[in-house]
Image (cartoon, rainbow over all chains, first blue to last red):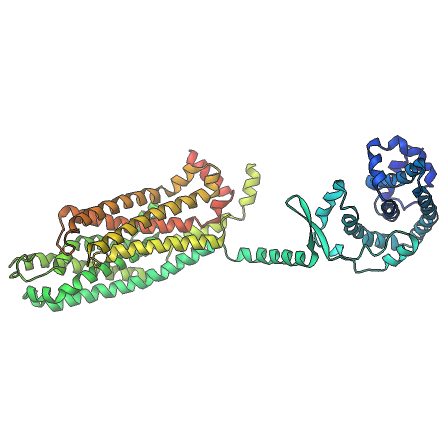
Length: 414
Length: 162
């Protein structure tokens, strides 16, 4: 009979709560079940704590029929017995409280049996209270410290319903008012529990929540995408500016050179200050335009780029033309520097011997004309499909499609 | 996981260095009043390329792919950038040494030979390609897939192994 007392308590989940068995019947049973090493701990336990535990177990029993309450009940009941053995003053006080309990707990439970909804409500309101209460009373006991991990500020920790507190106050001698939410909580920081302000804790958790909410809004992918789009804007500007510059340059050359390059010395004299700055500007704009055009056809994926070029895609053609124009323009660097350093042939140490001006200038003008044509054509080709951007499609958009089945795939592989 | 703010900072630094590189390539020939000016510009340009190489490698080290030991996969994906950057740095240094050597006595002298012109063309073309590939790599490294385990990564790994 006595050996089955534990399991009977466990089954209490489904059955209606029963009255507490009389204390003396437990006292005989305890030495059989209790491990001896727990004895010193109960010595240190204050009478209040044991009483409180007793009270809690009595209240908790209807809702929780698991083993821990049984053990705790035994543990709490164990304390008075040992005290009695040692003949201290405490047992008397405890005995009175136990007898008090003997009277009070059946009435309480009978009440619980009588009223339908009250036990459930009580269990809901009292359970969180127990959680908050523990650390303050037992914070000195290292074995119980892990309970403090549960001290995250949750709604269920804060008791708004104060009906249960006075009721218990009248029944038990246990200290009252502990269930009130206190300003301080003990938080584990670097393996130590430190007192922290509850309000601050709430603030920090709220801040974390806010940052967690903000995070998905702006990812590294978005940064890369925005930079890519910004560069495409710069590229779009440089395409037009380059085309205009190149056309303006060739017009200036033909205007200055005159009909059939009749007066090359005059042209060189006029153009020498313009030659090198324009060459530099042309390189800058050509570089930007070429990079932008390569971006549009995703030049790094060679197979795609070649396929597009063979399909006479306007953007692929434009990038090819830009690259050709860049090579041609760079090949004229030497001549541009020669023009830049022009001095009349009469001056000592002149780079321009008499009679060779036309010979040097003719191919230079032709190359400049070709560059202007290539650049203008590229601009036209690009403006035919201004929205085309394979880099963005291949680098960014296609990746998003892979995400939904990512998790499935990982599970399947693992 | 790569933080957005960190990535933005690194990306802006990379773009700053790239812009400087483009600027020097475009206008260094104009800024040759004194040979020292060109020398300083060239030195900073080469250091900028070196910095960019260091930054891109640090970004590689920061990826999940690298930390998982799949260095080969990273190299396979970005070998174009790595090789091109190395080639560009070599071309730049050689051109700068050559040009400075010729212009050190008189910065406004005509120094061009066919060899120098060829090297110049290749260096400037490599600069454009380097700029394009480097920019693309820097932006691709912003992809969150490089910083977490994914099916994509496993697929890529299987492809490289074959």
